[in-house]
Amino acid sequence: MIITADRIHDGEKWLPLQTAIEIADDGTITNIYHNGHPEAEYITGVLTPGFVNVHCHMELSHMKGVIPEHTGLIPFLQGVMFRRNDFTEEQKINARHEAYETMWQNGIVAVGDIANGTDTLDLRSKEKMHVHTFVECIGFSDTTAPQRFEYSRGVYDQFAAQHSTHVKLKQSIVPHAPYSVSKALFKLIDRHEPSEIISIHNQETPAEDQFYIDKTGAVNDLLDSLKIDASFFEPSGKSSLKTYIEWLNPHRPVVFIHNTCTGIEDLHKVQAHQYNSYWCLCPNANLYIENRLPDVPMLMAEGADICIGTDSLSSNHQLSVLAEIATLKKHFPQIEWETLLQWATSNGAMVLNMQDEIGSIAIGKKPSIVQILDLDSTPLAKRVV
Image: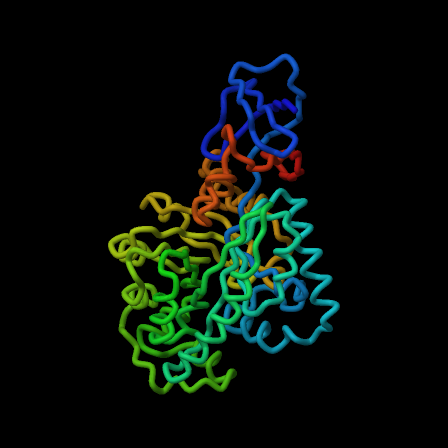
């Protein structure tokens, strides 16, 4: 199979006009013809590698439309906690399988999936998408940290026992967020398989920093509603990120999720402390929950490595990486499509450490190929290979 298109993005940049790509039956790219090829099949629109969704909660797919928009993060989290089990097991299974198939159809080839239990083992066994499962560990009390960690390790072990010859299956234990993980639990997580990447929901609401600075604000409402005693907690007088980054191994790769309220001083603190840091943007979820967006121009100006996530159907209308970068283009029109497509493909592959096979159009790789129609108006993704 040899294909060409109006424009081809290789995961990092636009390729010369009339470039053609040769693809074997198993999806491997076998040749790239920069001066065209007489047998190439022409495809309308733009071709890119398959998208990488670095942050998703497939286990929450049954909650689509349950929580209204613009509640703010704390009421949103309370809604998830108190309503996530108001469904039958059949409804949950059907919803997450439908979400998985829709992501595949939307051109997503790999996903970083948050898991609080083993519900999504069955999705990984479908072996269409590469999956890195981030097993989320939660516990704000130091005294319960060992038990909380052992539960997460038990979940991790079940994912780690799953193998595939067709797709990459990876996993790591990660902290949920600074307001839901104690310092002791941070330390236990950080010592577990220190070469594996961790993710953390970071500065998604002003209340998170407020809690760490002076222990006031809406995080207290969340903890009270969950009957969590936070009397032991001593505020640091600094933002959450400036505080917890010092609890992490600087050699461990970390992907910070959302970053809606991250400032330049927070970014500089991370860059000075962490050797490998990545910044995942989920703009449609940010608008759904808090109705605000991160300071993307600042992140770009300061050289942050940016990737893209969708969050969950409890906080989004669809699971589409293309829809996420289209939202960024709408709100930040100065960002070139060339850059946005890089965030959505090769950068995401690098974050999940899958760049040897996906994320870029290069000989020997199997990135999958996606066609984008109407890129400059209402983009639509269609899987080609």
